[in-house]
Length: 413
Ligand code: PLP
Image (cartoon, rainbow, N blue to C red; front, side, top):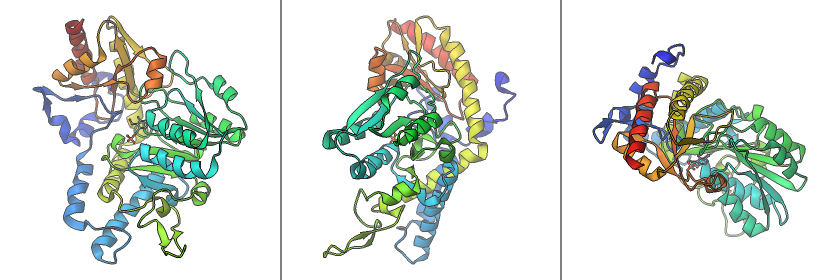
Protein backbone atom coordinates (compact mmCIF):
# COMPACT_ATOMS: atom_id res chain seq x y z
CA UNK A 1 0.00 0.00 0.00
CA UNK A 2 3.07 2.23 -0.20
CA UNK A 3 1.90 4.32 -3.16
CA UNK A 4 -1.26 5.17 -1.25
CA UNK A 5 0.09 5.80 2.20
CA UNK A 6 -0.53 9.54 2.10
CA UNK A 7 -4.26 8.92 2.15
CA UNK A 8 -6.13 8.46 5.35
CA UNK A 9 -8.52 5.78 4.10
CA UNK A 10 -7.58 2.78 6.17
CA UNK A 11 -8.24 0.08 3.61
CA UNK A 12 -7.26 -2.73 5.98
CA UNK A 13 -9.93 -1.53 8.39
CA UNK A 14 -12.42 -1.06 5.57
CA UNK A 15 -11.81 -4.58 4.28
CA UNK A 16 -12.30 -6.07 7.74
CA UNK A 17 -15.96 -5.01 7.53
CA UNK A 18 -16.60 -7.26 4.49
CA UNK A 19 -16.84 -10.97 5.32
CA UNK A 20 -17.13 -11.90 1.65
CA UNK A 21 -13.61 -10.65 0.98
CA UNK A 22 -12.32 -13.59 3.01
CA UNK A 23 -13.70 -16.16 0.61
CA UNK A 24 -11.81 -17.93 -2.09
CA UNK A 25 -12.94 -18.40 -5.68
CA UNK A 26 -11.47 -21.39 -7.51
CA UNK A 27 -8.98 -21.66 -4.70
CA UNK A 28 -7.77 -18.07 -5.10
CA UNK A 29 -8.50 -15.07 -2.89
CA UNK A 30 -11.49 -13.19 -4.28
CA UNK A 31 -10.63 -9.95 -6.04
CA UNK A 32 -13.92 -8.24 -6.59
CA UNK A 33 -13.84 -5.66 -9.38
CA UNK A 34 -17.52 -5.68 -10.36
CA UNK A 35 -18.60 -2.89 -8.03
CA UNK A 36 -20.44 -0.95 -10.72
CA UNK A 37 -22.88 -3.87 -11.00
CA UNK A 38 -23.25 -4.45 -7.26
CA UNK A 39 -20.97 -3.52 -4.40
CA UNK A 40 -20.27 -5.87 -1.51
CA UNK A 41 -21.97 -5.44 1.83
CA UNK A 42 -20.33 -4.68 5.17
CA UNK A 43 -21.10 -6.75 8.25
CA UNK A 44 -22.92 -3.80 9.84
CA UNK A 45 -25.45 -3.85 6.98
CA UNK A 46 -25.79 -7.63 6.92
CA UNK A 47 -26.49 -7.56 10.68
CA UNK A 48 -29.48 -5.28 10.15
CA UNK A 49 -31.41 -8.20 8.67
CA UNK A 50 -30.91 -10.53 11.63
CA UNK A 51 -31.66 -7.70 14.05
CA UNK A 52 -34.82 -6.70 12.20
CA UNK A 53 -36.21 -10.23 11.83
CA UNK A 54 -35.22 -11.27 15.34
CA UNK A 55 -36.49 -8.19 17.15
CA UNK A 56 -38.96 -5.94 15.32
CA UNK A 57 -40.25 -7.51 12.11
CA UNK A 58 -43.66 -5.91 11.54
CA UNK A 59 -45.56 -4.06 8.88
CA UNK A 60 -45.07 -0.31 9.05
CA UNK A 61 -47.38 2.68 9.38
CA UNK A 62 -50.46 0.58 10.14
CA UNK A 63 -49.99 -0.84 13.57
CA UNK A 64 -50.19 0.66 16.98
CA UNK A 65 -48.20 -2.12 18.55
CA UNK A 66 -44.59 -1.77 19.66
CA UNK A 67 -43.00 -3.81 16.87
CA UNK A 68 -44.82 -1.86 14.19
CA UNK A 69 -43.86 1.41 15.86
CA UNK A 70 -40.21 0.41 15.98
CA UNK A 71 -40.15 -0.78 12.37
CA UNK A 72 -41.90 2.43 11.24
CA UNK A 73 -39.46 4.61 13.15
CA UNK A 74 -36.44 2.77 11.72
CA UNK A 75 -37.83 2.90 8.17
CA UNK A 76 -38.77 6.58 8.36
CA UNK A 77 -35.42 7.48 9.90
CA UNK A 78 -33.79 6.32 6.67
CA UNK A 79 -35.69 9.03 4.80
CA UNK A 80 -33.78 11.52 6.89
CA UNK A 81 -30.52 9.64 6.20
CA UNK A 82 -31.13 9.65 2.44
CA UNK A 83 -32.15 13.31 2.50
CA UNK A 84 -28.85 14.10 4.24
CA UNK A 85 -26.90 11.90 1.84
CA UNK A 86 -28.30 13.79 -1.15
CA UNK A 87 -28.60 17.12 0.66
CA UNK A 88 -32.32 17.28 -0.11
CA UNK A 89 -34.12 20.16 1.48
CA UNK A 90 -36.95 18.10 2.98
CA UNK A 91 -37.25 14.48 4.02
CA UNK A 92 -40.59 14.05 2.20
CA UNK A 93 -38.73 14.71 -1.06
CA UNK A 94 -37.35 11.16 -0.72
CA UNK A 95 -39.41 8.29 -2.14
CA UNK A 96 -38.26 4.77 -1.48
CA UNK A 97 -38.16 2.53 -4.54
CA UNK A 98 -36.67 -0.84 -5.43
CA UNK A 99 -33.80 0.97 -7.09
CA UNK A 100 -32.85 3.35 -9.88
CA UNK A 101 -34.87 1.52 -12.51
CA UNK A 102 -38.08 1.75 -10.54
CA UNK A 103 -37.40 5.39 -9.67
CA UNK A 104 -37.06 6.35 -13.34
CA UNK A 105 -40.16 4.36 -14.28
CA UNK A 106 -42.01 6.16 -11.49
CA UNK A 107 -41.17 9.58 -12.94
CA UNK A 108 -41.99 8.46 -16.49
CA UNK A 109 -45.36 7.10 -15.45
CA UNK A 110 -46.43 9.89 -13.13
CA UNK A 111 -44.81 13.20 -14.06
CA UNK A 112 -44.39 12.03 -17.65
CA UNK A 113 -47.97 10.91 -18.23
CA UNK A 114 -49.41 13.94 -16.50
CA UNK A 115 -47.26 16.54 -18.24
CA UNK A 116 -46.16 15.32 -21.66
CA UNK A 117 -48.07 15.28 -24.93
CA UNK A 118 -47.45 14.38 -28.58
CA UNK A 119 -44.61 16.36 -30.11
CA UNK A 120 -42.90 17.13 -26.78
CA UNK A 121 -39.21 16.37 -26.72
CA UNK A 122 -37.06 14.48 -24.23
CA UNK A 123 -33.28 14.61 -24.33
CA UNK A 124 -31.27 11.55 -23.31
CA UNK A 125 -27.58 10.88 -23.87
CA UNK A 126 -25.56 8.24 -25.68
CA UNK A 127 -24.09 7.27 -22.30
CA UNK A 128 -27.35 6.05 -20.79
CA UNK A 129 -27.99 2.72 -19.14
CA UNK A 130 -31.01 0.96 -20.64
CA UNK A 131 -32.99 1.83 -17.54
CA UNK A 132 -32.80 5.50 -18.50
CA UNK A 133 -33.67 4.79 -22.14
CA UNK A 134 -36.41 2.18 -22.28
CA UNK A 135 -38.92 3.81 -19.87
CA UNK A 136 -38.78 6.94 -22.05
CA UNK A 137 -39.08 4.93 -25.25
CA UNK A 138 -42.18 3.19 -23.89
CA UNK A 139 -43.68 6.53 -22.95
CA UNK A 140 -42.68 8.09 -26.27
CA UNK A 141 -44.44 5.29 -28.17
CA UNK A 142 -47.59 5.73 -26.14
CA UNK A 143 -47.73 9.53 -26.12
CA UNK A 144 -46.01 10.41 -29.40
CA UNK A 145 -42.96 12.05 -27.81
CA UNK A 146 -39.72 12.76 -29.63
CA UNK A 147 -36.46 11.49 -28.11
CA UNK A 148 -33.22 13.26 -28.92
CA UNK A 149 -29.80 11.94 -27.93
CA UNK A 150 -26.71 13.92 -26.88
CA UNK A 151 -23.72 12.42 -28.70
CA UNK A 152 -20.34 11.67 -27.15
CA UNK A 153 -16.84 12.50 -28.35
CA UNK A 154 -14.12 9.91 -28.98
CA UNK A 155 -13.26 9.84 -25.27
CA UNK A 156 -16.82 9.08 -24.23
CA UNK A 157 -17.50 12.57 -22.88
CA UNK A 158 -20.78 14.28 -23.66
CA UNK A 159 -20.71 16.76 -26.52
CA UNK A 160 -21.98 19.80 -24.66
CA UNK A 161 -22.13 21.95 -27.81
CA UNK A 162 -24.46 19.37 -29.33
CA UNK A 163 -26.55 19.41 -26.15
CA UNK A 164 -26.96 23.19 -26.47
CA UNK A 165 -28.09 22.71 -30.05
CA UNK A 166 -30.52 19.90 -29.31
CA UNK A 167 -32.31 21.68 -26.49
CA UNK A 168 -35.15 24.06 -27.33
CA UNK A 169 -38.43 25.32 -25.98
CA UNK A 170 -39.93 22.00 -27.14
CA UNK A 171 -37.72 20.09 -24.69
CA UNK A 172 -39.67 19.13 -21.58
CA UNK A 173 -37.19 16.84 -19.88
CA UNK A 174 -33.48 16.07 -19.93
CA UNK A 175 -32.75 12.61 -18.48
CA UNK A 176 -29.05 11.79 -18.08
CA UNK A 177 -26.80 9.81 -15.86
CA UNK A 178 -24.39 11.51 -13.47
CA UNK A 179 -21.72 8.87 -14.07
CA UNK A 180 -21.70 6.39 -16.93
CA UNK A 181 -21.69 2.77 -15.81
CA UNK A 182 -20.02 1.56 -19.00
CA UNK A 183 -17.17 4.11 -19.23
CA UNK A 184 -17.14 5.93 -15.89
CA UNK A 185 -17.55 9.37 -17.51
CA UNK A 186 -18.65 11.98 -14.98
CA UNK A 187 -21.13 14.36 -16.57
CA UNK A 188 -21.32 18.11 -15.85
CA UNK A 189 -24.73 17.88 -14.22
CA UNK A 190 -24.80 21.35 -12.70
CA UNK A 191 -24.23 22.96 -16.12
CA UNK A 192 -26.67 20.60 -17.78
CA UNK A 193 -29.33 21.43 -15.21
CA UNK A 194 -28.83 25.16 -15.69
CA UNK A 195 -29.16 24.79 -19.47
CA UNK A 196 -32.29 22.63 -19.09
CA UNK A 197 -33.91 25.16 -16.79
CA UNK A 198 -33.02 28.06 -19.09
CA UNK A 199 -35.20 26.34 -21.67
CA UNK A 200 -38.02 25.58 -19.28
CA UNK A 201 -37.20 21.85 -19.15
CA UNK A 202 -36.77 19.64 -16.09
CA UNK A 203 -33.78 17.42 -15.47
CA UNK A 204 -33.79 13.89 -14.09
CA UNK A 205 -30.45 12.43 -13.08
CA UNK A 206 -29.70 8.73 -12.90
CA UNK A 207 -27.25 8.73 -10.02
CA UNK A 208 -26.78 4.94 -9.79
CA UNK A 209 -23.05 5.20 -10.47
CA UNK A 210 -22.41 8.54 -8.79
CA UNK A 211 -23.83 7.83 -5.35
CA UNK A 212 -21.08 5.30 -4.49
CA UNK A 213 -18.23 7.58 -5.55
CA UNK A 214 -18.83 11.23 -4.92
CA UNK A 215 -20.73 13.60 -2.65
CA UNK A 216 -24.16 14.38 -4.04
CA UNK A 217 -25.86 17.70 -3.42
CA UNK A 218 -29.13 17.83 -5.29
CA UNK A 219 -29.67 21.47 -4.34
CA UNK A 220 -26.24 22.62 -5.52
CA UNK A 221 -26.61 20.56 -8.68
CA UNK A 222 -30.02 22.13 -9.21
CA UNK A 223 -31.67 18.92 -10.35
CA UNK A 224 -35.39 18.11 -10.29
CA UNK A 225 -35.19 14.33 -9.87
CA UNK A 226 -32.28 12.16 -8.72
CA UNK A 227 -32.30 8.36 -8.47
CA UNK A 228 -29.93 5.81 -6.98
CA UNK A 229 -29.81 2.15 -5.92
CA UNK A 230 -28.83 0.91 -2.46
CA UNK A 231 -27.02 -2.18 -3.73
CA UNK A 232 -24.38 -0.09 -5.48
CA UNK A 233 -23.64 1.89 -2.30
CA UNK A 234 -22.75 -1.06 -0.04
CA UNK A 235 -26.41 -1.69 0.73
CA UNK A 236 -28.76 -4.58 -0.08
CA UNK A 237 -30.62 -5.25 -3.30
CA UNK A 238 -34.30 -4.29 -3.39
CA UNK A 239 -34.01 -0.76 -2.02
CA UNK A 240 -33.20 2.57 -3.60
CA UNK A 241 -34.54 6.07 -3.65
CA UNK A 242 -35.91 8.83 -5.80
CA UNK A 243 -35.39 12.45 -4.86
CA UNK A 244 -37.92 14.85 -6.35
CA UNK A 245 -38.39 18.55 -5.69
CA UNK A 246 -41.36 18.85 -3.35
CA UNK A 247 -43.44 21.11 -5.65
CA UNK A 248 -43.07 18.59 -8.48
CA UNK A 249 -43.86 15.53 -6.35
CA UNK A 250 -46.86 17.26 -4.78
CA UNK A 251 -48.35 17.93 -8.21
CA UNK A 252 -47.72 14.40 -9.52
CA UNK A 253 -50.50 11.80 -9.66
CA UNK A 254 -49.91 8.39 -8.07
CA UNK A 255 -48.52 5.51 -10.10
CA UNK A 256 -49.13 2.19 -8.36
CA UNK A 257 -52.35 2.00 -6.40
CA UNK A 258 -52.83 0.04 -3.19
CA UNK A 259 -52.52 0.23 0.53
CA UNK A 260 -50.56 3.04 2.19
CA UNK A 261 -50.87 5.47 -0.74
CA UNK A 262 -54.43 6.59 0.00
CA UNK A 263 -56.22 8.92 2.39
CA UNK A 264 -59.65 7.40 1.92
CA UNK A 265 -61.13 4.77 -0.40
CA UNK A 266 -64.74 4.61 -1.48
CA UNK A 267 -66.73 3.00 -4.28
CA UNK A 268 -68.57 6.26 -4.76
CA UNK A 269 -65.60 8.06 -6.27
CA UNK A 270 -64.41 9.01 -2.84
CA UNK A 271 -60.88 7.66 -3.16
CA UNK A 272 -58.26 10.24 -2.32
CA UNK A 273 -54.52 9.96 -2.11
CA UNK A 274 -51.96 10.35 0.61
CA UNK A 275 -49.53 13.23 0.71
CA UNK A 276 -45.97 12.78 -0.51
CA UNK A 277 -43.92 10.67 -0.03
CA UNK A 278 -46.48 7.96 0.83
CA UNK A 279 -48.54 8.62 -2.31
CA UNK A 280 -45.74 6.92 -4.25
CA UNK A 281 -45.13 3.99 -1.91
CA UNK A 282 -48.07 1.65 -2.48
CA UNK A 283 -48.14 -1.65 -0.62
CA UNK A 284 -45.73 -3.12 1.88
CA UNK A 285 -42.28 -1.82 1.03
CA UNK A 286 -38.93 -3.58 1.42
CA UNK A 287 -38.76 -2.63 5.08
CA UNK A 288 -35.62 -4.47 6.19
CA UNK A 289 -33.87 -3.55 2.93
CA UNK A 290 -34.59 0.15 3.39
CA UNK A 291 -33.36 0.05 6.98
CA UNK A 292 -30.23 -1.77 5.81
CA UNK A 293 -29.72 0.80 3.05
CA UNK A 294 -29.76 3.48 5.73
CA UNK A 295 -27.08 1.58 7.59
CA UNK A 296 -24.99 1.37 4.39
CA UNK A 297 -25.25 5.13 3.89
CA UNK A 298 -24.19 5.64 7.50
CA UNK A 299 -21.23 3.32 6.87
CA UNK A 300 -20.26 5.39 3.82
CA UNK A 301 -20.69 8.66 5.69
CA UNK A 302 -18.55 7.42 8.58
CA UNK A 303 -15.65 6.84 6.21
CA UNK A 304 -16.48 9.88 4.11
CA UNK A 305 -17.69 9.65 0.51
CA UNK A 306 -15.02 12.16 -0.52
CA UNK A 307 -12.32 9.91 0.87
CA UNK A 308 -13.77 6.84 -0.84
CA UNK A 309 -13.92 8.75 -4.13
CA UNK A 310 -10.31 9.92 -3.90
CA UNK A 311 -9.12 6.43 -2.94
CA UNK A 312 -10.86 5.05 -6.03
CA UNK A 313 -9.25 7.77 -8.16
CA UNK A 314 -5.85 6.53 -7.04
CA UNK A 315 -6.87 2.96 -7.86
CA UNK A 316 -8.09 4.12 -11.26
CA UNK A 317 -4.81 5.89 -12.02
CA UNK A 318 -2.85 2.82 -10.95
CA UNK A 319 -5.04 0.52 -13.07
CA UNK A 320 -4.70 2.85 -16.06
CA UNK A 321 -0.91 2.75 -15.72
CA UNK A 322 -0.87 -1.03 -15.54
CA UNK A 323 -3.42 -1.74 -18.27
CA UNK A 324 -1.89 0.72 -20.74
CA UNK A 325 1.25 -1.40 -20.88
CA UNK A 326 -0.66 -4.50 -21.98
CA UNK A 327 -0.15 -5.19 -25.65
CA UNK A 328 -3.32 -4.93 -27.75
CA UNK A 329 -5.47 -3.67 -24.88
CA UNK A 330 -7.61 -0.63 -25.67
CA UNK A 331 -9.41 1.36 -22.98
CA UNK A 332 -12.80 2.70 -24.05
CA UNK A 333 -13.88 5.83 -22.23
CA UNK A 334 -11.00 8.16 -21.50
CA UNK A 335 -12.90 11.30 -20.55
CA UNK A 336 -10.90 13.67 -18.33
CA UNK A 337 -13.40 13.30 -15.48
CA UNK A 338 -14.01 9.65 -14.69
CA UNK A 339 -15.10 7.52 -11.77
CA UNK A 340 -13.30 4.27 -10.92
CA UNK A 341 -14.45 2.29 -13.93
CA UNK A 342 -12.29 0.93 -16.75
CA UNK A 343 -13.81 -0.61 -19.86
CA UNK A 344 -11.49 -2.28 -22.28
CA UNK A 345 -11.24 -4.58 -25.25
CA UNK A 346 -8.29 -6.68 -26.32
CA UNK A 347 -7.30 -7.30 -29.94
CA UNK A 348 -7.87 -10.89 -30.94
CA UNK A 349 -9.59 -11.88 -27.68
CA UNK A 350 -13.29 -12.12 -26.86
CA UNK A 351 -14.35 -10.21 -23.74
CA UNK A 352 -16.41 -13.20 -22.63
CA UNK A 353 -13.39 -15.52 -22.75
CA UNK A 354 -11.32 -13.06 -20.75
CA UNK A 355 -14.08 -12.75 -18.13
CA UNK A 356 -14.46 -16.51 -17.75
CA UNK A 357 -10.75 -17.26 -17.56
CA UNK A 358 -9.90 -14.45 -15.19
CA UNK A 359 -12.63 -15.70 -12.88
CA UNK A 360 -10.66 -18.95 -12.66
CA UNK A 361 -7.90 -16.84 -11.12
CA UNK A 362 -10.28 -15.38 -8.53
CA UNK A 363 -10.85 -12.04 -10.25
CA UNK A 364 -14.45 -10.89 -10.78
CA UNK A 365 -14.89 -8.40 -13.62
CA UNK A 366 -17.92 -7.84 -15.82
CA UNK A 367 -18.09 -8.57 -19.51
CA UNK A 368 -20.86 -7.76 -21.95
CA UNK A 369 -22.79 -4.69 -23.07
CA UNK A 370 -23.30 -3.33 -19.53
CA UNK A 371 -26.91 -2.42 -20.44
CA UNK A 372 -25.50 0.35 -22.62
CA UNK A 373 -25.90 -1.14 -26.09
CA UNK A 374 -26.24 2.19 -27.97
CA UNK A 375 -22.95 3.42 -26.48
CA UNK A 376 -21.04 0.24 -27.26
CA UNK A 377 -22.47 0.14 -30.77
CA UNK A 378 -21.34 3.73 -31.26
CA UNK A 379 -17.80 2.62 -30.40
CA UNK A 380 -18.09 -0.33 -32.77
CA UNK A 381 -18.09 -3.13 -30.17
CA UNK A 382 -20.70 -5.56 -28.81
CA UNK A 383 -19.00 -6.10 -25.50
CA UNK A 384 -16.17 -4.90 -23.29
CA UNK A 385 -14.50 -6.10 -20.12
CA UNK A 386 -15.14 -3.74 -17.24
CA UNK A 387 -13.27 -3.45 -13.97
CA UNK A 388 -14.86 -1.14 -11.41
CA UNK A 389 -13.47 -0.22 -8.02
CA UNK A 390 -14.83 0.17 -4.52
CA UNK A 391 -13.62 1.39 -1.14
CA UNK A 392 -12.15 -2.02 -0.23
CA UNK A 393 -10.03 -2.54 -3.35
CA UNK A 394 -6.28 -2.18 -3.06
CA UNK A 395 -3.38 -1.40 -5.38
CA UNK A 396 -2.10 -4.93 -4.74
CA UNK A 397 -5.39 -6.28 -6.09
CA UNK A 398 -5.00 -4.14 -9.19
CA UNK A 399 -1.54 -5.62 -9.70
CA UNK A 400 -2.86 -9.16 -9.35
CA UNK A 401 -5.67 -8.30 -11.75
CA UNK A 402 -3.27 -6.84 -14.33
CA UNK A 403 -0.93 -9.85 -14.06
CA UNK A 404 -3.90 -12.23 -14.37
CA UNK A 405 -5.13 -10.31 -17.38
CA UNK A 406 -1.79 -10.66 -19.14
CA UNK A 407 -1.79 -14.38 -18.40
CA UNK A 408 -5.33 -14.83 -19.70
CA UNK A 409 -4.73 -12.80 -22.84
CA UNK A 410 -1.72 -15.01 -23.56
CA UNK A 411 -4.01 -18.06 -23.29
CA UNK A 412 -6.81 -16.87 -25.56
CA UNK A 413 -4.80 -15.26 -28.33
N1 PLP B 1 -28.35 3.39 -14.18
C1 PLP B 1 -27.05 3.09 -14.17
C2 PLP B 1 -26.05 4.11 -14.64
C3 PLP B 1 -26.64 1.81 -13.74
O1 PLP B 1 -25.35 1.51 -13.73
C4 PLP B 1 -27.61 0.89 -13.31
C5 PLP B 1 -27.23 -0.47 -12.90
O2 PLP B 1 -26.23 -0.99 -13.31
C6 PLP B 1 -28.95 1.27 -13.32
C7 PLP B 1 -29.28 2.53 -13.76
C8 PLP B 1 -30.02 0.36 -12.88
O3 PLP B 1 -29.93 0.15 -11.51
P1 PLP B 1 -30.88 -0.91 -10.80
O4 PLP B 1 -30.74 -2.19 -11.59
O5 PLP B 1 -30.33 -1.01 -9.43
O6 PLP B 1 -32.27 -0.38 -10.85
